[in-house]
Length: 261
Ligand code: SAM
Figure 1 (cartoon, helix red, strand yellow):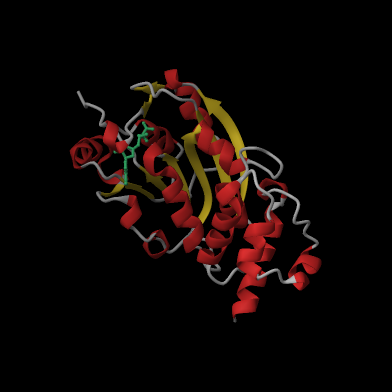
Figure 2 (figure 1 turned 45 degrees about the vertical axis):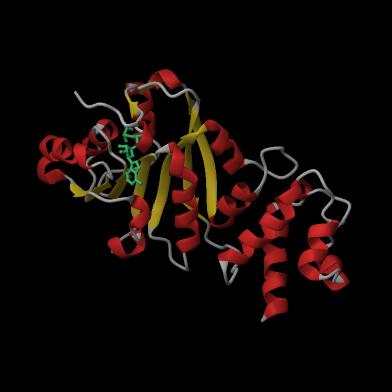
């Protein structure tokens, strides 16, 4: 009997309906697949049944590796490591589909790492990822919504995002205290060519530092009251950070980079 480790976010999926829904989000047959955190192999089994071409998993917990090897034999390429230490773009020659019922404590860190590391070419075809619902709501939020913020702007920069469903705690063992949501991500063919993602992070950090206040102060802090930027982007300084759409934040970052180059 495997005892779930809270520190590694181990809530194993036990709901066949949800497991089916996850593997039916995208076409798996003959595709290269990566699963983050296979755990006891519940989702892994469902993916294998769909006949992928090559199937790699990354699992941090040493104690689960023997069980995975025994269950799946040579059908699985198992990497026993922390996903945050791995550069996936170097791992695969062909694009992969990524599945992950992610450990909640590092889910946004994993997603941010992947987005920031994409240069021109995507190493993945799709991401099918589970988040705690509150985080998923922030990822998919549009402007003028109270969930809209830095994570929405970063995630929507290079990815098209679709919510598949919400998932109740009773679908997991042990049961988490919160609801979850399943999101499907696909690469955007065209995205704003920001030179350094740190600049997007900096602009959104300064703008969202005080969500309730007008954007006059953060704008002046970054652009020294440069009226040309205001006029070019048609920004009203009486607005609040959540009233600016995502494109405006990418354009602000481009202007910031142009002024510094
Ligand atoms: N996929 C399984 C399922 O749906 O039943 C398990 C999902 S469980 C929420 C998260 C899994 O990620 C666990 O197996 C955990 O050990 C693993 N994990 C946690 N942190 C990790 C990390 N940094 N790198 C790789 N795997 C990690």
